[in-house]
Image (cartoon, rainbow, N blue to C red; front, side, top):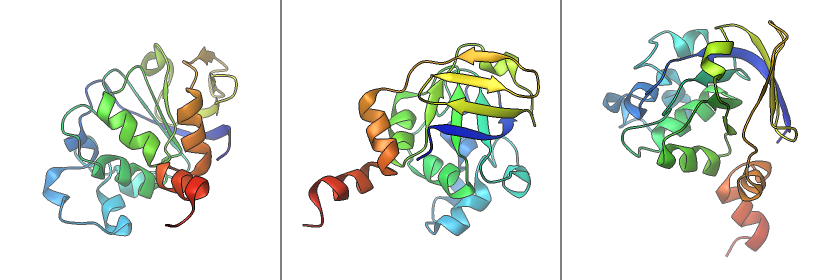
Length: 167
């Protein structure tokens, strides 16, 4: 995993729940190629069609609230979301995202400082988000050491394989 992530911003508001990230009507789909077609469909029906892999999602508070469905994080990863930067995250979604290898970074006030399409650079080692479009730099909360270890391995399953091999 790269510690410097850059891409275009897709901006959402607060209280984006898992049903907006991945609507329940698609839960029967399990193949990541099918799942990614419905990423963020409850908040923006055109997201999957317009999103450029490698981009970042920026949101307000409580991103990922609602049910604990892992499909929400799977959909974002399959769609090519390189990171989610939000003012706060729902606890279970946060764990699901990190466990799947998606960097989730808390950054106060980010939803007011970034616009759709802005070019962003997220430096995980410096806990800093730079909006290259506006030139503004925003301090973020540091990613914890354990979460960073999981992210560097590409997710919890890959970390466990790395540590313990196949048993």
